Structure formats: structure tokens, C-alpha cells
Image (cartoon, rainbow, N blue to C red):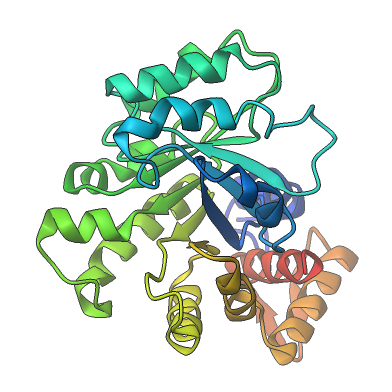
Length: 300
């Protein structure tokens, strides 16, 4: 035994908390999807306040418009370092012909997206395949797989733990359709829990699916607050008007933020010993959560 620590490994993990979170979490509260058939909306998406703007080649694009959509995104990704907001691309399912055509376009482009969203991922082999296809690309491309099927949910632990996966997202609409379930809270709670478990095991973020009723701001805020309480760090948005309530729902209360800052400060002052805040001994998971809350607040 090592005093407060149960092992040297636990003490080492404790000392490295801050660096770990900066490396593994890109603190993405909102991903705004924009149809790649609507280039007039590209700049609006960038200016929307979303943490990530995602050009969509999949569900938002009709089959006969796929090729036109591909050409529209060619100039959307500027050279690295010139980005005011994370820019992402959702391609079609990697195991389909449409997905392979999207990959050819991606590999041909000089400037690549920061992140590629892979829809309907069902196995870690798909992630490995994407990594192999992009192995010669100099620019680092993060991966955000969408869990949207029963098979994907079953294999979510391996998917989330794969190389270059920055977060996992829940494709709630497609998942509900496959399961024959409605999109009520109780119907999706089990799947959300499984995805959160996979994300936590891989030490990455989990992004919740969209709230489909664009005009239901109150319902959206309530849903965001509920998924935030579960452990989700972000949510997909379908319209710029959804960004503000999403960010509000993921923003910690002032009371929670003040306590988190006190915990982080106490850790900084004594990174290798017992941390006590307001008379209470603080253990490792609490310090990790506090660091994440502070980082989230600084992202505002």
C-alpha cells in the first residue's frame, strides 16, 4: 500500500489526469449537420456557434444527388490551422459502394476534414479499414463512429476502443427504426447506457443523437439536461436554432463549476497526495469529473 493510494498505478494515473483529458476529449458539445447539397448553408453553419460543422453526404442527400454533393464539399476544408471551428464530413456507410466513392474523394482532396463521421458502424474492423485507407495521409483525421444498429451496439466496446476514435455518437433515429421502437426516453435508455459504457471504457466522449422536433426548444433543453446527467458530452443538431439550448443544457451550474474549480486547484497544489475540499476527501473519479467540468466551462 502507498498511503492514500492503493497502488503505484493509481497514483500515476492521478498525477496525469489533466494531460489525459486534454488528449482524449475534444469537448464537443454540438455537431451541426448540413446537407452537402446546400453549399449556401456552409458558412452559416460555421458561424452558427456549433463546436463542429459537419457536411453530410449520407442521410441528408438523395441518391441521385450524391455526386453533386461530393463536388460541393471540395472547398469546404481549408488547410490545417485556418479553421475557426472543427469541420467534419459524414460519408456513406463504409461497406457500401457510396461509401467507397466518398473515400476516393476524401483521399484525393488536398485538405482533409478534422474528423470523419462513419455511419452505421458495426465492427472494429470497419475502423481498422478506414485507418488503413488513410494511413498515407499526412494530416491526422479523427474518427467519430455512429452506433445506429443492434449489431453496432453489441460491438460498441471494441468500436470505441479503436485507434483514432475521438468519440462515439448515438444514431438514435436509425436505431429506433431498426428496433421497431419509438424514440421515447425509456425506449432508448438501455442503448444510451451501453454507448456511455463503451465511451467510458475507452476514455472518450459520447455524443447523443438529434432531437427531431426543431421547434420544440423546451423539449430539446430537457432532453439535453437528461443526457448530460447520464454522462453524454454533446448532441447532434439539425438546425442552428438548436445550438444555444444544447450548449445551455451541457453548461454546468455556477455552484457545480465553483466546486469543480476548487477541486482542480486543490489537486494542482497537492498532485501526489490526499485532496480534501470543504472537509471532504476527494477521490480520483471526482477529480477527473471536476477537470472535465472546468475544461467545458473554458470552452464557452
